[in-house]
Image 1: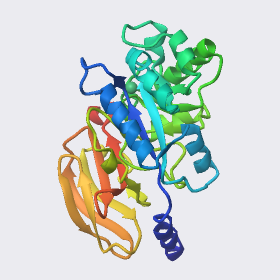
Image 2: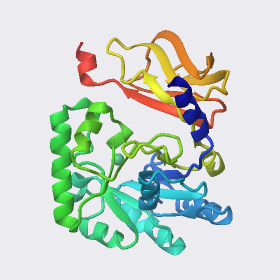
Image 3: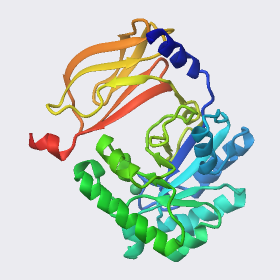
Amino acid sequence: MRIILLIAVSFTYLFANAHIFVYHRFGDDRYPSTNTTLIELEKQFLYFQRNGYKVVPIENIVQKIKNKKDVPDNWVGLAIDDAYKSFYNNGLELFKKYNYPFSLYVYVEASEKKYNDFMTWEQIKDASKYGSIGLHSFGHKRMTQISPAQVYSDTKKAYELFTKKLGFEPKTYVHPYGEYNEAVLNELEKFNFDAIFNQSSGSVSKDSKLNDINRIALVGKVNLKNKLRYKTMNAIWEEPKEFPNDGILKNVKASVSPKYKTIKLYITGYGWRDIKVNKGIINENLQIPLKKARTRIILSPDYYTIANKIIIKNKKTKEK
Ligand SMILES: [Zn+2]
């Protein structure tokens, strides 16, 4: 059984990898940490165009994953989170010029209550002529910090308002702050989204999980070529599954291709280290106190082919 498993793991490593990128604000230099200038955006679009990349609707990528079909290497999906006005006023024009589809993710409370910086429902409806619209929660809360019942009610409220205002149901969901855990996913599952996206450097392949699809953030000036190098390394992740209650990371356990004898392990706050792989099995004893409430753990042979896991400390952990 173990042998069959490992062959499957090493084989899937060969498959194609598409990339989904996330933007936030456009041409809005008040917020450099979430902004992409229009000059930079056009540079990126030209890079896609000149290097054989095809910007496709994210739904096409989801369909491939659903059908367990290879996702072409040159496919790129573009997402825009929060539905800031700067997308409508600045960014959208360039998407139209290049005829690039996008998925726009609505922070429902902000649009509903007409917060200054956010698109109105009318603007979102207009944008839906050029791309698809998905859900980005009602209250944009840190979902790992509220109860499962609150996650459910936030999503229900968002789902219903979205449907009422736009006249169609949201088919995809992205997490506020990219933060989630098993409990959050369990609640979201009740809404039957076609796909749920994270925000994590990695690629998309037919082995991606429909409720955990990688998206790479693009902010400011970026080296697109490097971002497009990210590939998914298939790993069967065993430990850790969640942020440890006592804050001590005991070990990292996973199965990877047996072709690796050593591999690099990254832990937020600790950087990279080399660890041993024994016949495809990683079992690294660590016993280290985690430094960040949001900790990323990455396994990679080369810094670009990666399997990763984000674990987030939740309120319950803190109280213990
Ligand atoms: Zn957001």
